[in-house]
Length: 167
Ligand SMILES: CC(C)(COP(=O)(O)OP(=O)(O)OC[C@H]1O[C@@H](n2cnc3c(N)ncnc32)[C@H](O)[C@@H]1OP(=O)(O)O)[C@@H](O)C(=O)NCCC(=O)NCCS
View (cartoon, rainbow, N blue to C red):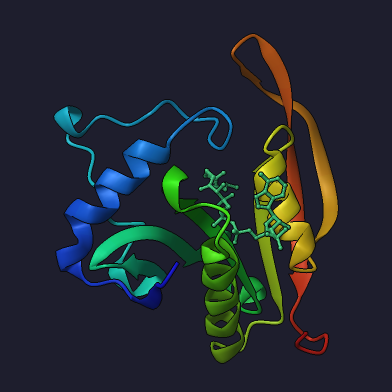
């Protein structure tokens, strides 16, 4: 599977909105699926193109990752967070997410961060397997934080130490 990764631009709104909606499920998000009819857009005050890297295959956006600040305080200048990651189902298993995560990690390092965090639902085995394969460690478990489809689901806080040697 040939793909390239580049920074998003404002022109990627339609492709990213389509991808986000197509991959939205309670496996990966505790929030209800947003509705474009209710005014939802991919880019907004909290999601700017410069925070997003996209994976492109045959000129189509097939994956994205969002790098963000979970807590925007002077005391958390050294921390960045992954706040979104998705790959179209037909493009999974080809290393696209791993490549996107590595690029986000490099961006966080370039910005001077020493810690990269994320949250993942306890039942999201593909994502947990991905993060573990990239060296993320579990730092906390918020037990039964969400009730999704009549089941209680943990929220798992994971982090990567960016001061460790690059593997
Ligand atoms: C999680 C997701 C982004 C993975 O995308 P992907 O492009 O298929 O992942 P990759 O091909 O880069 O996989 C890299 C590694 O992740 C792990 N992994 C991927 N899919 C997995 C699965 N179904 N089960 C267990 N581990 C898995 C493996 O370690 C894999 O390495 P390997 O292929 O050498 O074994 C994709 O399944 C997805 O978009 N899911 C829906 C959205 C989502 O869950 N986002 C994360 C929210 S926290």
